[in-house]
Image 1: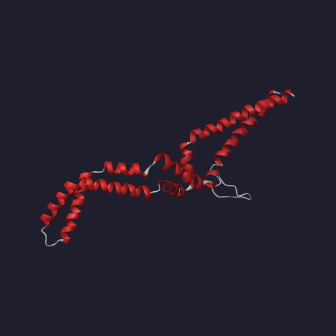
Image 2: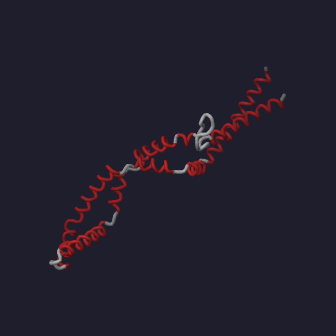
Image 3: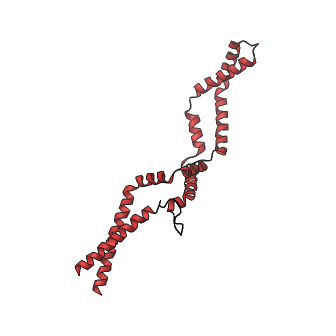
Amino acid sequence: MLGKWLILGLVGAAIGYLTNVIAIKLLFRPLEPTGLFKIQGLIPKRKAEIARSVGETVAMELVHVEEIMEDFIETMDKEAFKRQVGEKIARALTQKLIFVPESIVRQYVDQFIRDRGDDLINDIGEKVVSEAIHKVDISKIVEEKIMAFELEKMEAIVLGIAKRELRYIEIMGGILGLLIGLAQGFIILKM
């Protein structure tokens, strides 16, 4: 009697464990629709939906173009930028105004950059931020990156990150199956 009860418990444990192992495999496998019923893993089947959802979440909750651009402008070396702009303007004017000595052009440009350089950087920065906000679509970028991701690589990453948790789910399936099998055996044997 005890042997039958233990066998039912062990069968339940095996069923619970194997069911969870198969369920975890079915998250990614099969990668392509196969068989008569076109069975496909959950993540491959809903990859586009997952990509869109992750893209929207990243854009709304995590990454904002405005913050990135403002941080970029705030941390850039403004003096080096003003120097480069001054050099380019002076070079361009020297080539166009060949009758004006280069030293006078450079002096005029240097004075202009000293007087108005910060205002120019702020104006350009505001325009760049505004343009980026309207043209850069973080959601779409993330969605496209996820869609371009190979499913095998995505599977390896997810399984690598969640290995311990997925193993826990498999073991818990076995434990729950064991308990259910033992309870079932107890009920059957008491009848």
